[in-house]
Image 1 (cartoon, rainbow, N blue to C red):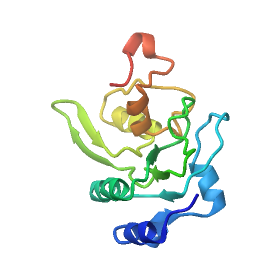
Image 2: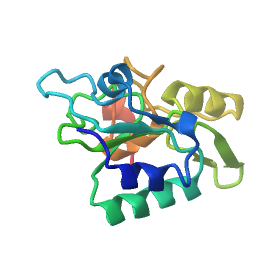
Image 3: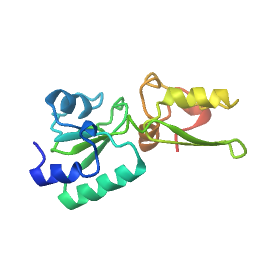
Image 4: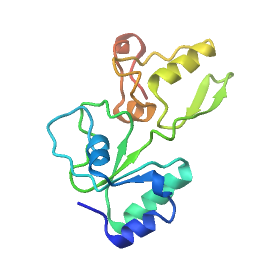
Length: 162
């Protein structure tokens, strides 16, 4: 399934051409996660780089009645990042910055595409510990960890992501 000409034109009004992919290889790669049950049918992959672009994308999707599927490291096994009905996949891999650290509150503000392992390393550099850990920590994104309440191998001791 592909986007209509008007929807595609509207999309290009706030995203650059290198932030939109519609080639078959990209659609198959970004349109799925580690589950193998689903047939992939994404209409486009987009790569926002700011909160403003994400907001514009949501408004665009509502206006054009097009579903959005968030995509991070695509390491999940729940099927949550699978595009099966012509949705537009929103890859957060370019929104991968650690934005702020508050040493008093011991909190960090990150973009959804920050890789779990990068956050663990950042915490270690600050003398802290981010315990959520699993085999895919080198490729999973914090946005997906939060969305799925991930826990990993240390979940009994430290709890789930919340």
